[in-house]
Image (cartoon, rainbow, N blue to C red; front, side):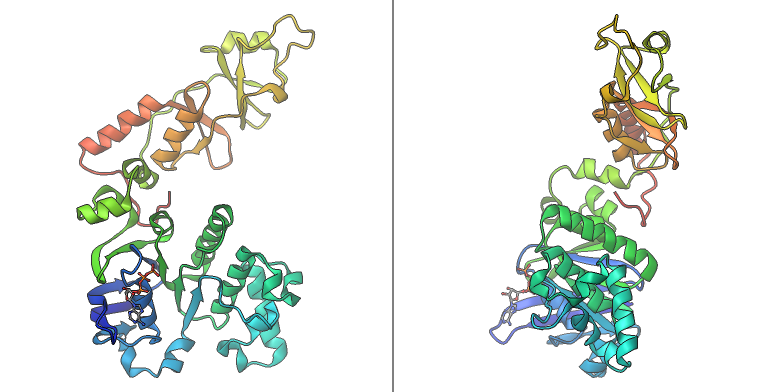
Length: 379
Ligand SMILES: Nc1ncnc2c1ncn2[C@@H]1O[C@H](COP(=O)(O)OP(=O)(O)OP(=O)(O)O)[C@@H](O)[C@H]1O
């Protein structure tokens, strides 16, 4: 665990970047520091590995005051990833990873094998190993940065805006892979971002800092969205937070039976079972394939069967036990107005209307709770 105890950083010019900060980052979890530009996120992060020393206060790492540990020793147990990855431009990808201090003590072959494993782990193909950083995309460079930080297998990782320099699609991929990696590795991570959506997606807990290095709120993402502690946090957390909070809320919504036909069925059969002009079409295994519009059927066609090519694929699928946000989205995006809910194997369980989801949300709100806001839940 990392603990900030009344930590203040005043720079020589008098700027107070961090002011009496008290904060705990639990072991094995992701703590995100988020806040507007200049609120002291980077300063706080760099005080953990002593790139910056606090003016006053103490930072504890697993019960030891970091001020008592020589910086080089401290940093062996702390990986550090920054924006643009900070790779050595004149070294290959492989050399960038093998030359970190944690691997230096090993013989060349061991270091190389470990580096190749790490590159694979972060999703890079072996052929990338001989390239130079400039020959990689921004996203690939960030992956190398993560691999390098993991090289010494440090229990702690500090990450300063590691995914900010890439486009939104790559960014989302990197975030998802990072979460998958953390499920295996259980590192103690302190992650800095200015992007509240990234904070909410990645953090087990989120610390919102205000300019001057004050802690405005420390809470799990769902709590931050549903109960911002001040107008500053509410403003920072931003619009749509009621809807986004649903991403952390699970709750049983009663499903209705949905009549279905198979791909290739006779349109007459579809008409017989249909509840309205939309019929849900499933495959042999009962997995939903799309919706068939009866009134859109030209009639009198020779084949006159339900064809896969003419299905409406507009609706998203929700998984039973998923968030109410995903169920509501399935309902709102369905051409029939009925959201399709499937089991973990993708087989149809039933459908649900947006009205039913809203009723459920209102009932939960009436009960004064926000469903099972699991700390581990992700939107
Ligand atoms: N070496 C320095 N000397 C003087 N002031 C500094 C120094 N480094 C940072 N600051 C100031 O300390 C405050 C906090 O800076 P810091 O970089 O920690 O903020 P940040 O939240 O990470 O900002 P950003 O999101 O813009 O990177 C800012 O007002 C900054 O100008």
